[in-house]
Length: 273
Picture 1 (cartoon, helix red, strand yellow):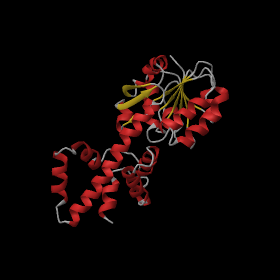
Picture 2 (cartoon, helix red, strand yellow):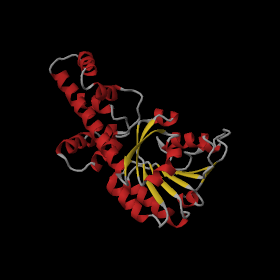
Picture 3 (spheres, helix red, strand yellow):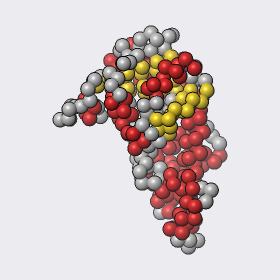
Picture 4 (tube, helix red, strand yellow):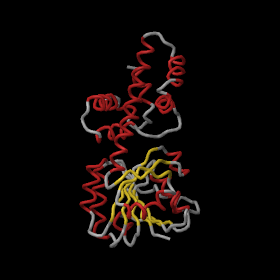
């Protein structure tokens, strides 16, 4: 079994790391804020998962690892952690970045890794529920041989869609999440207009859910997702400065009170304007 280092135990990272731990791979985990690994290592009065250890630094975590998986919040966090790990990476190691950082930061990450260390960009679509059950969609980009090596790890986490060469997974994630976030934000605006015009909210939601926007409406009205508004705004920034996406980002940033709530919270924020 390959030794895996998993860096980043946030909302998504923790259930993903548990999925990999349950496959029996030796797993070393690290998180910037201590205490997140308690449920994996047994340090909170639980038995923990066999074969899981916690490192105190990212460099310690990757030492001797065959595969490194990163699930971090933004490009700056990935760059910082990669810089701390570079000297400890084993020749032939595979780095799988599952963070949403966009293709430009992915190119920078690749350039900063030591010779002989391969990179696959594999950001995911889905929330904490699918992360725990292996139901994520994984957008994977990289050289064919590297994607073959990453496949056994990635398929434990969800359905793997091979997107093409290096950076293609990161690029497709920007496209897809940009559309989702902008459309959910626009739907929030539409529902605010409905209230101003006297259209009952239940009626508006029912008709929107039954029409061509059914998928967007389902995401907007869900109570089961956990994708913070601040991360949604970050992902829109990765898409560049197009006027529609930029406007949606401005709307999200204008409501700091919902920054840590799921994206669906923008509906209530806009109705309360």
